[in-house]
Amino acid sequence: MEQNFNFNPSFIKLLMEDDFTREIRIPYAFVRNLKEKLSSRCTIESEAKNSVRNSWPVRIRKKGRYYYICRLSWPKFVKDHHLKLGDYLLFHLIDKTTFRVKPYGADCCPKKFNVYNSSSSSSDDESDDGSDDSFDDSDETEFYSLDE
Image (cartoon, rainbow, N blue to C red; front, side, top):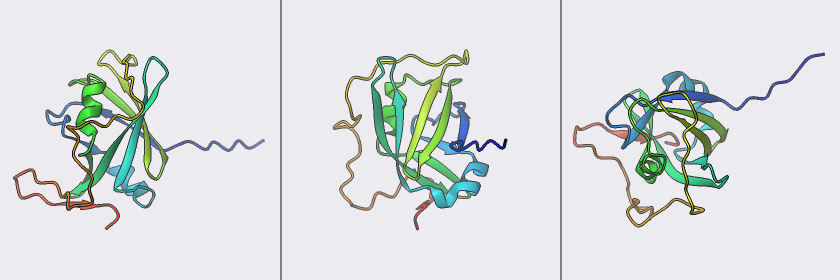
């Protein structure tokens, strides 16, 4: 009997870059194989230890040949999960606009955290008013949307 395993594409990311609080690079092989299935505007979801599932809106941007999750609520996601160097994130692509993310500590055990609001947006998040939100990191690097 043939089994049909329908797995969601996934990748693991070790937080080892000092600027992971601003952006996180998506593995090139993941993007290369799934580029047509990704949207430039995505949501990352995570389930807290109190079984509340929360979401954070983010952008996927191209910088050179690499793609990054950045902007919007990514810094808030990092803060809400108390992420630090040496932690791991397991990303599952649920659909074109949604990643489900499970954080792990440097000890390789799932991180426990509480988030109480149903949507993780705050007044310090960047506004999404339809204006040009191109990323300027002051090193003359250009970002391009996946949808462009």
